[in-house]
Length: 508
Ligand code: XMP
Image 1 (tube, rainbow, N blue to C red):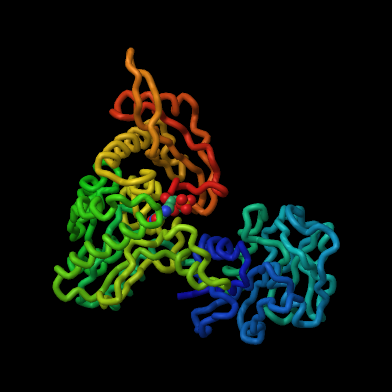
Image 2: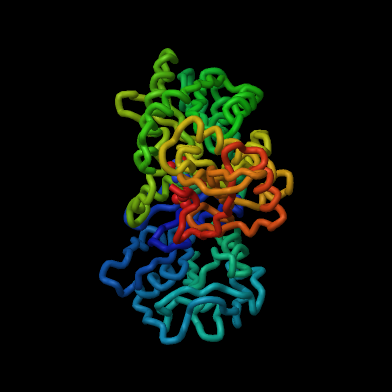
């Protein structure tokens, strides 16, 4: 498969480069500068990313340019641009003027293939501490801004280009055109990496890889595991054994409705109601991390038990996606765990199953597009993220079946109203939280002393940062009324107006 190699020097924007290149229907992979795999004939071009380092820093990323320059098309971005100049004895120095934020291209070399279709005066996004003062011999300027003469260059006699600004960020108006020119016109990629082709080639590959073997997959009701299930189902049919565990911490009616829709999709799925087992390990547990660990361990227990019932099963399928892969092999190593998120689905070594991960190379939005291609229902594809430990981390303090029941009712009123008012798709994630306090209220002539719930709805792109959703007051008023009128035991509703950071999306 035609591939663009992205050499990651630790820039915060590296993933964006990959996403933009894929938007041009070209497959690409990010690899840390110090862990570059063997270059195969599938690699059609190389992008050298930005970096938090300066080229003059002692521990700045070092790239083996000889391997690429003159042999493959190369595009250096920011640090990548400065690094190539530095290595050829040009002059790169700390910039004296501000080179951060928006700028406009005041000169464009119209003959240069990379720049075709880029408009004069087009806005670009600068973000660099170093600047290229002098280009080495054979390097030619292809674009400039008012304050940065060498905003972009090419190297004579090679397919090597570089830009000091960031074409991958949204604020670079014609940035996508630049990246598309690079992959299409310079690397000559055929731009055929579409969801349709991904589905066809993945099914073929899975058929080859799995033959007549049996595979077990834990379904969660979420997009990733559902897409994995459909791909495997198309490749190996009934040799795929799906297990959907009810941990008693799902949303109201979710277990039965999701199980039904899996069956409608033709999947060979077994629903296992282990609610009581989960409640029993959660008894007396109040610490959020201990809850997560207890739920994770119980899940493995139940799942292992079910897998053992499938005779001769050889593979475990997982819904790992590309951000998880990049995260665990990034230039700085896995980032610090703030919450033990990926706690469900870990594999005990004694299970001795081989792992198959058909979505390893996809970003979340690509998983959705593949799901659509596979005919997954839009309700399933558009579902809000929901944490593996479920309502347990939305019940502050000890989890009991009674509290789960109350929270399910509250949550269901909130979510149903979001749908009714056409707000569901505008919100990235929403849910309700049961607080460990009681509050005084009045109902008729009587004083009440009942529970308090908080509603949480956020807007986000990837869950890493989030802002609280500015839901309309009328909507909130209706939801609050309905909750207090209908859910016995709740007499107060609050709305969470904290952003992440410093708060997190979940309360625990
Ligand atoms: P936070 O609370 O860290 O959440 O802002 C970010 C995203 O991660 C989800 N989340 C979890 N998902 N297991 C999961 O599978 C967990 O333990 C967990 N904790 C938080 C959260 O719902 C949000 O989408």
